[in-house]
Length: 202
Image (cartoon, helix red, strand yellow):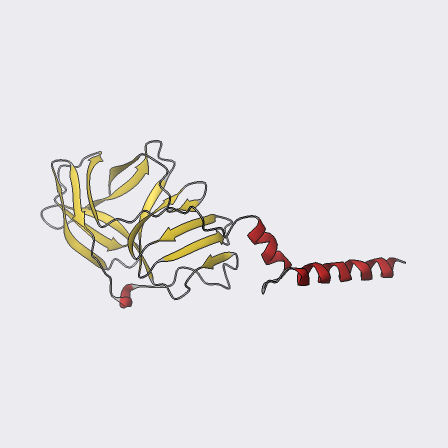
């Protein structure tokens, strides 16, 4: 009798899977039912330039550079810090040599990219004195410092949805060019509201 019950359970599982036309099977369909990959209502936070007041002003900052977050490739050296304000125009397009994929599908099976050929770059803003010495970085926080935003570049329009291997939820809609990505309870391009620039000295 036990074997027969197990047989019925197996048959029921197979029928349920085939009842849903899905390449990834029942688990994939359940994930979609949870709304993880629903892209409706996603906001974008594209940016072409920054002209903003900065808290914690360091009077020695003169030059602002847009720098790759890990490799220190310099994307722009044209920014300035004057009268307590950060001013920089972001480059319109980056060469493919500095771009990379954001997710490895094998390591992050729960993440879905609408175009897996998308090239990305992540950047930070650094402040330098007149002698060209690095003296700190500019960070973008909400007033409680519980949300931080980073600058991401994408070489095409793309959405990213699902959960990564660290169980963080992504609901992201990038437009080609530079975008703010907000890290809070979930990771999103939808602005959480008031944000401020803060300078942190080295």
